[in-house]
Length: 321
Image (cartoon, rainbow, N blue to C red):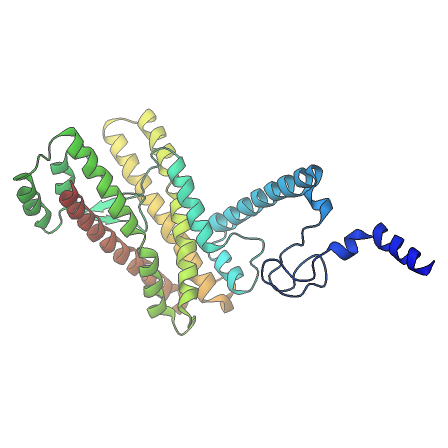
């Protein structure tokens, strides 16, 4: 009789005996519905129903991702340096990973049509933190002249033109494609360049290189999102102004946008590298002056790097046409 009762109880509670005892993902022993090592959730029969999938997996995950993305973007745009501080304070669950954030911004940049570039040309030096792409014109020759700061590209183009047709529509299209592919990819190396520069400047305050790299990823993400601002502004300006007024408003808008970038970078540097000062730093204090000089140096270094990168990209594109 006791044996029969025991068998009946076992049949009434199959879930207790069918639950796995080790994690299927990492092999660690289980003591509940979640693995203590990797966090994997144990799959049981109720979790395989259609209602559970729609109610928990689909709706929950969509709302969670949407809220996480929006919260991260709000902090990125309106709280300079905050995400980097949170990352190294161990508060990471509520924000997108820095690498994923940069990739998300790149996807947004690729989806939206022809975003504007916050770029100020000083002679042939393009002053910017991270322009979305190199300049292109209707002909290969015009583009090369725009990017040829040392006179090397023109001579190289003349040699290439002697053995291939660089004026055909197919050649121009391939040149533009190759230039954007190589130069844009190379230009994002300035994330590492920025991290290296910040490491040299602030290694006594932040001794780990990864700290500067995460900060650079957040700055690059901000610049990419902020690069979406000029297009609607310039479209409005072209509708309301003409002649000299148009030129003046365009120049003023470019200076204003670059100033906003510099102010953002300055505030981010102060928050991340001088957290002990809080949110208020006297404009005449040593941290404030060091930060201003750092911002100017970063803009110049990145601008030189980007200009040289575009020239190298144009040389590769000429060779590949």
